Length: 413
Image (tube, rainbow, N blue to C red; front, side, top):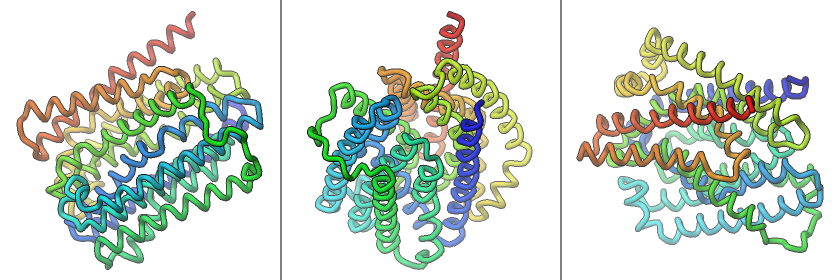
């Protein structure tokens, strides 16, 4: 790998380790500083925020990554960025106003045990996260990994940790509004900084709002893909929303499963961007993606073995109040971690390489398996949701086999 490539991966890996530590720290602080009821509601607030913001941003962040990085025309890139930001701003405003105006009827579906004011704050939070996706992709498209990781760190865990440290004694309504306002402020500041860095604020494209048909189709399918991806992390806790403490345990277990994924994504993301970019040899980068798949698969199974040796002790240290339930969930789900890791090793590359939404189809299939399993069991409790989650994650193994097989066949040809 070239020196610049190694630097890009090193920056991404360094920030990923930092973000992973802060994610674990945030859950530990929530476990220690909040009641079980409030912890469940706060984690559900954040997890559902990530879900709906992926849909609200309309896939525009993925449009930037594919078409901005793939173009060598600076005028087109400037016009595309302006159009994306304008569409995103309207979508964010719509989401915030919807949650504000319809807070009362939406609350039973989102947070049945909370006050409607929490749903109003949720709309602002969703808008802030969605705008943050645009900011993150803007910096990524310029291969500015420090700035992209900073906004991702803020939204992923840092702002949450700060709120826990300074507002944990507040009620749920106040806590939600503080987190929501801080999130949208961070996104706006990041986008403003990007505009200053590129001088794109000076451009007034003649077609200020119009995206091409291909851009719209690509963005729409990728919005659904991102939404379906986050749904795999939310559907189980959402089904347990009337039992916030059990929902929190499931969220914590999911986070442990995806820690390995977060370590894979920095390298996979760099290679996918380079394979799609006009600046690099796509064939060489695709071979590196396959090598990464082999390394990830081996080390993921080593990670599974390590969990069964020392994992329960580590979870008890991490979550002194919730460890029992989390360990029971992880004992069932941990063997599916290698499949999850392979899916996310390939996801970014498949997303940018093909116009056809293969990731969306895989995610919809996995969610369908989850829903079929819950219907088959005929009841919604923690045991049923965990069993359904195991079947859902097993679909990722099939995806990985097909995707790796296709890449090997392509290289041989």
